[in-house]
Each structure stands twice: as structure tokens, then as C-alpha cells.
Length: 220
Image 1 (cartoon, one colour):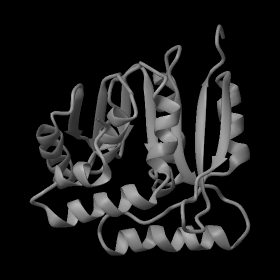
Image 2: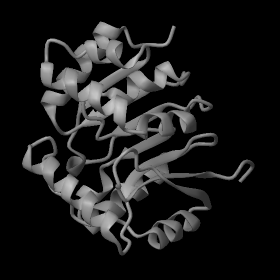
Image 3: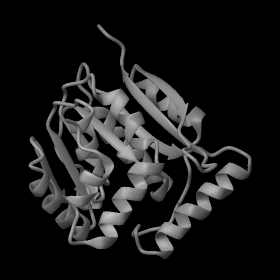
């Protein structure tokens, strides 16, 4: 039987803040269902950059993803929580590491997840991160991102305010820097021969959030 929201959250006890964060996040955020639908049919190893407390690893296993999962984050406290929860859940094929990407990109071949991370980097660092992530892709693998996109409108203002709040509460180590433009991402993917899709992923709140997937064409 697949674990439910409460069961996954209980693996984060005795940290009550992480327990309630997991329950609320899994109940309200469409991210996990969206990413799971993309990756459940793949078998390539997944590198989850900025994994936080590792919720994606739990939800992917529940949705049928069978590849190895490696979560990395700069926040050592979140990684410690992720490791403890994975141990309690007996999560197969999952490992977590504290890594500062400023010191170098981890070696990896397979799929890459960049979820709510790109917008927190300045443009030069965004470009480096995306190029390194694209270089990891193997046949059958996918680069899956969630990010706000730089577009005119009140949705971006709302998204920026929430991202700033995450910094104010110290859940994130930095505030939002620049939201990528869709045309810039499309041009970058095209240069590498990748096919990309952009799907709104807003949940119950009016975020300017998009699920972005890029992969090599079969036989390409």
C-alpha cells in the first residue's frame, strides 16, 4: 500500500516543524504529483538539487519511481532531517548529502530535478547550473524544473512575495534573485537539442509557477 501524507510526515518526527511542513506541503502543493507523473515512467538515477528535507524522495517511491535517488542541499540541518526520515521510512535507493554548489557541481549521469531553486540564484549562476544539469542528461532521462517565470502580471508579484517570506522565515538561505524568462530557457534547451514543455503548476494559490521538462528526443 502506498504511504499517505500523514504516514510520510510521521517519518519526520520528533521534529514537529518538519512534520507539519510535510503534511501541509504534501496536502496543498501540486509539485509532487506533477514531478511524479514525469519521473514515474523513468528508471534513470535522479539528482535532486536543493532537496530540502527530502520529501520528493518519499513521494516518488510512492508513485512508482524505481531509479536511485540522490538529494543534495546546502542546509546541513535539512539534510540531517532528510536522512533520519529516509531511515525511518526504510526508503530504498535514497541518499542525501550536504553540498554547496558554489564549490562545484556533483558528478552525475541521469535525470536532474531543479525545484524552486533557479530563481534564488543570480543570472550567471543560473546559467552555470542549467548547463551543468543539461550535461548530466542521458537517454531516457529528463531535466525537471519548477520555477516562476518572468512575465508581466500580479501572479509574479505574489510569487516573489512568498519567496521573500521563505527567506524572512529562514527556510531559504537567500531571497529570490531573478526569475528566468521562458524564451531564454527555450533557446538554451534548443541549443542542446532538447525538447521542452511548460505546464502551469500553481496549486491552490495564484503562483506564477511552471513545471518545466526538457529531454532529448528519442533516437536523437
